[in-house]
Length: 511
Image (cartoon, rainbow, N blue to C red):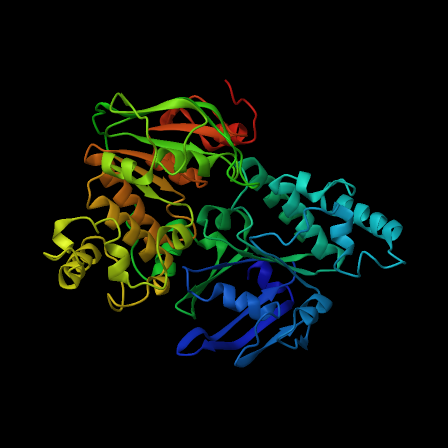
């Protein structure tokens, strides 16, 4: 008998069912959470993970079933009930007030900051005790706006512990962390468990799940398809459980490097918003048949770099050359005509128009082509739909109908649609920003295969990703963005996760 089987049940999920119209998000899901256990919940997009956690935390009320927590039935539909019972949740996107201090963010959940009896002294003491107990050091008087991503996450965890949390739900907790910060978080999780906390971990990163969890629950299409002891699991087995079949991961093959496609020389630009850095005199050279991977924690200049190389942003200083010719004008159309394809970071906001149909979104890069226009200049709907059908077939875009609104596509199918509409133009340069973020293992393998095919055809790829395993697997060269500056590029074979992680944190950056 495994150790977790000897523990008492802290949480019991019994036959939870939740529907939204004709969609069954959760279908009679049942499992238990043991005291002192790290339980991982895996599943592709749309598998029902988020819905289930929202039911547990009180954001949704289940249509059927019940939740037993600490031996008592948990009333559903109100987060206050979950918090009072001892359930805390740290969402992927933090819910902090940047203009307040750490201590004020801790207190604000209990009472108004305008309260005349604000318990600053007792709160400060409790915060220090929690920080010491769980190894989560933080300065109480620091403005949240001045905290790093990992410090903000630390604060979110402390907020839940301050409210006497005994079960902590972490939703994609490593999405914006360096490898060193991830290791530190996992060390913290293990320490918290030793001190009596139980954890539910939601993540797409299988290697992380395997390293920190005790048991794994797998959801697929709203149903529970498997429970496995982590010690008996491996990446291949989990991936097959998630997608319901074999996952064939692609491998990078040797490709002869050709002519230089694009060169950025001493490029600088101002920040485009408060959440990202500008660029400081960066230099890039990218050739045919080459993938340059860009690593870095979110907000260090990735978005300005991608937008500039796609013609959406004009540099303040420096120059860009395409096949040796210096560019003087900057516009998305000019860069598209040169052969640049751009897959944006936010595929749903910047990549497509969700309320328009699949076929309409598929031909957005082709509207000037004769093949999709009638003799009088109007779009030829029949030809447009034929083109869309061919794209969906070639790139395995799975849709109920070409008339279906694009917003109803899964994340993986959206990404394949975006790639397909660009790649049929045979671009000289593909700029792919976070191309597999939030996708299931099957979709990830499919997208990675498409990217390697672009390289195989002798074209170049700028790959911007936070997934270091993906970066090392696909890239020929790797450079790191930190605080708007770009390191020199290194052969991918000469790097490892640790070295890249140190550079992402600003250490050994110029070595």
